[in-house]
Amino acid sequence: MSEDSAKAVFTAVPKIARALKAAYEPIGINVLNNNGKDAGQSVFHFHAHLIPRYGKGDGFGAVWHDHSSEYSNDDLQQIAREVSTKIY
Image (tube, rainbow, N blue to C red; front, side):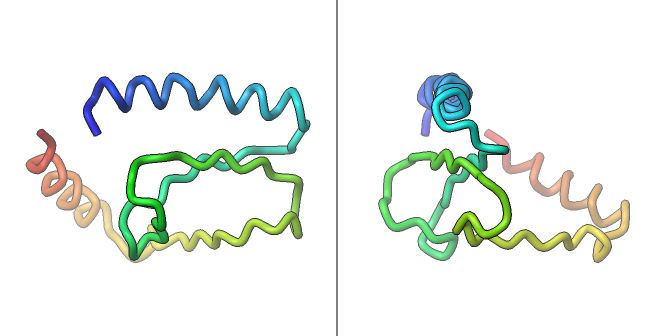
């Protein structure tokens, strides 16, 4: 995705989120993008999901595991350095 396309998409996302909140009064909204088959992508073009949330048991099944305790500050700095060399 080009930077211009990303700018257009992510300019629209908060507008749509505000409209969802005004129309349906969720207690929160998840913004989700599945990038790649192994990440759950099934339609292979960029799109974002805006998922209104209504509390536990609302049917959304994502599970987030915090692995931050598995990394030292030095590990995180190394990861940041490695990623920064790949930014273009």
